Amino acid sequence: MASGAFASTEAVSPKAYILYSIGGLHITNSMVTSWVVSLLIIVGIRWMAGGRHPKLIPSKGQAVIESMLDGVKDIINPIVGKKVADKAFPLLIGFFFFILIQNISGLIPGVGTFGHYDESGHLLYYFRPGNADLNMTLALAIVSFIAWLYFIF
Image 1 (cartoon, rainbow, N blue to C red):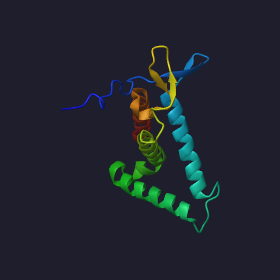
Image 2 (image 1 turned 90 degrees about the vertical axis):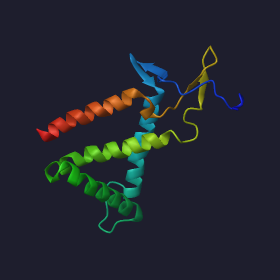
Image 3 (image 1 turned 90 degrees about the horizontal axis):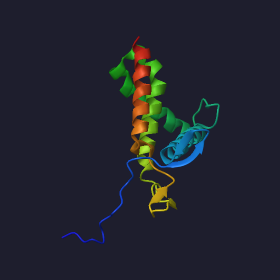
């Protein structure tokens, strides 16, 4: 028999909470997490690659990034074809790492737990994984569909 002490009355909200509104644009907790993840990807890649100018003899971080890029490129080439692979590679690699880190962001301590309580006593948390929101999935699907139409035509 399940004990009532372990049963949760609240689950992850099916919609993102609006944290701020700037000129009619609502800033939600999913957007904030997506921005933080994007910043972490940019800063992490720049830091590992050694800044703006990659070296001819790569550092350990640059070697890791180059091997990851080569590995993903080797996977993409037979799927999309050699002709389109070079054009589609930046989009596909960006999607791959963005979605991967968005999914991992839900496991970071503090995501979905820090926030403030509203009048009814419900926790409005500040960080929510971007992929938990249907808007992110829809936006990535639309961008990939339009980009793929551009690549094939």
